[in-house]
Length: 354
Image 1 (tube, rainbow, N blue to C red):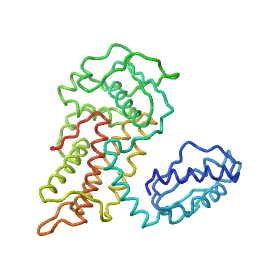
Image 2: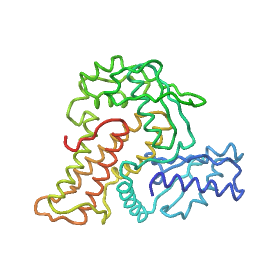
Image 3: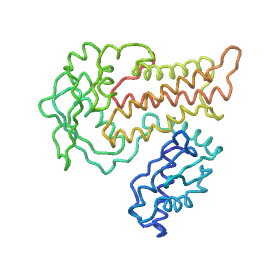
Image 4: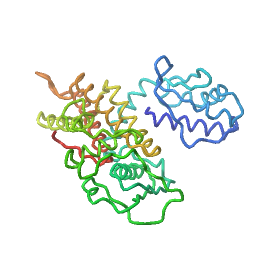
């Protein structure tokens, strides 16, 4: 069971409790679940009972117990506990978790670059307005792309005539149209340099990563470290992880086999990072924060290299290709697919060779 599936399961329990008049409170639009923190209980935790307690006029722990009774026994959930003032803690069923891992890999393969796209903002109409400044322009352009993955209708507008050099960064401005009722101003800290100067020093991919990776209220580091080809440079790490995943596919083809998830793979960190990607993408759209997407890509890249080092997707030495190799290759390819899709949303290329 993925975090998104668990979230929907808890939300259904809230709706059921309200429908049965066991709970009198408004049903939230979404329910957030998180990995249990160190020292906590179970695999995931949820604070929805604390959020509903005031409106329900009942203690949070009592609300949690009402929800626990309606979540317990759901497919994929082994145990539901109420802890503290009213937290719901979930322990997933091991066999169901294995099926969920398989379903996750197959879902990424089936959806490709559209993995993580959804309808969380389907009712939103956004007008993004930004100053005539390169970081604001790049941020607004990325936010338009990211919000559209969640079903939002989005337009961008600039306070002044666009800088012609923005086109070299992939930035375009929508033609005037009917604005949203409440325009959203995109106002990150300025880059402190013109687009032409940044492009001459760094090139478009490094410029976009340097402008988008920091949170909008943080200064954008735009030095030569963005061009360093080492794991210490997050941009290189993410792009190299993608190209390495593609190289594994080419290597497998030379050895006469391809990917197929036929055997459960021990790659908890990587599979968790892939499962968390849709929520990270939705959060980037909701909070107007492309840096959230960039950080998730970094997490996937780190987990990919740890996975590759611990269990090679390709046969080593005298090994023959096996079901384990095909399954590991499927996970590696899924990681490459998600990395390519995320980089594309940030307007950054994902080379096959690096």
